[in-house]
Length: 394
Ligand code: DWN
Image (cartoon, rainbow, N blue to C red; front, side, top):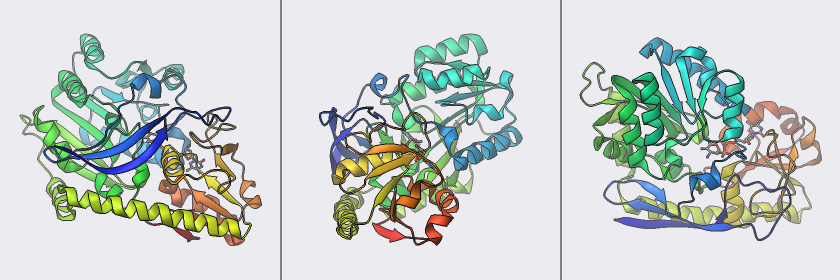
């Protein structure tokens, strides 16, 4: 049974940055549910993929050093540990991962044509299509089977998980490995990062819910790694149940135990989380308005999809945060979805005019603090809402 635990109000598409602010930008109700049987956490309103992931999609994986580094490390691990002949990435974005492999060894799948064109230009085989059974069949006709399939921050964005895993099953070789990585539900709940919920994130996986789902496809998790990326992610290593060559690591049991101990399989955990989210909104608004009363200036740092959830849920507009700044060319000079806050091009002096910076990209705090050490040295402060709203300078 699906039980609602959180209502984040009306939210625009998280990556629909507008050139001209419109107060009537379309918004959708964002409610979050827990399935008491499968233990899956998901949002209720499903927006058609074409509306969200199209030729205007602005998010680029390569833009942050942290992500480039993470993908580089992973590709070295894949080569050494699994020695695959051919790799397929579902959601190859701008090539942050595939660019670490030889061109004849890797295939990208990326439905956002603006991003697919980047890897095509780099001469990487890229299917600019949505991941589905038709595409899996097409790829199978050409490549027979794939021995390593990888997908980061993509499968949770696809509504029909049955089709997702049926298609993977069709293509994965018998002793093949599927690696997926996504924000960890445990970290999200522990850190009160309700901003991981937006229309693109249809599901937030836990090891518990993923295990339940994979069983239907005769797949199982054989290893799990905790990552610091995206506020705390899990990398799941998956194989066919019939494949006995890959032993099941203790990390799987350990993660499942941790999640059960925290209560991820109980509705009550989510209703407590929901109460903390309501308090987080109140406390963040209190901090921002106190700063504004003192006539200080606040800049939003990192025009993330997550920040869109925060702004729209807490009803924060340019009276509280004057501008945002971001390094992504596609976001610059646009407005934060749903709010009249303009995004300025990042430059190294931008923070000089501000007293405080709200960490929209709190998941890159270390990278940002290193970059902005001058601002901090001169008394500048950051505001974050994770794990609870507060002002920080270290
Ligand atoms: O799953 C998703 C994740 C992986 O990426 C998507 N559905 C959408 C997107 O979510 P996000 O926008 O919350 O992701 P990030 O990676 O937290 O976005 C970081 C943003 O901050 C980018 O727009 C780049 C910007 N940034 C910046 O301006 N200066 C980042 C850093 C580190 C910086 O120094």
